[in-house]
Image (cartoon, rainbow, N blue to C red):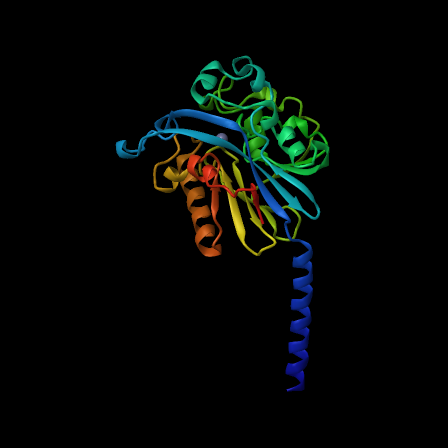
Length: 289
Ligand SMILES: [Zn+2]
């Protein structure tokens, strides 16, 4: 009996320790931003298999996230390059400007958004990049002093995409990353726990691109949320209509399923990279806590 009591006390002590470290590590908040909007254009331009009765024109966000953690600020994706604010067709392939119809203004870019929140690019400790497409890695060069968390394969692919993905004039824009050779890259090969406390976790979700990654955050409230970015563009992908732009459809499908299991088992809502309706229904302050 005495032994049991001792064991119980030890267990209780261990739980207290766990409790206090978890309390320290809580994410203060997650803020949802958009690097201007894309659209309107027919949804079938992105998801060709959407059936007639669900076809519509969409105007979609270009999602970026700020995660406020006691150990430092984390930015997840940096949106479209600031240059398209002035002259899209001088920076992107003109056909992409015509199709996507970006509305980005100067204050919509990641540095403008940070300024609105009382921060600056220099204060950001970690930049996580979901993938090297033009609407996600666009302003990565605004953060020369940050640690840059990206899948190693995605870095290779950004510099030299497969021929079928388009090496010039496609969704990989070399000018977005050609100044990053000496950046401090945390080159990942799979999942990663950013601060070692389980509160900001990178999830490997390849398929849309070779090394796409998503992020799961555990909030101070105890709730979790998943930011899929382009592992899942929008609701239609969840309903079984695959994205029309993939490096590997098989890996893409596995990644969608991986995130669905996290949603169901951990009761964690999934935020999609480009969903018109989800953006319209975002929290009124923009914050999730
Ligand atoms: Zn995207």
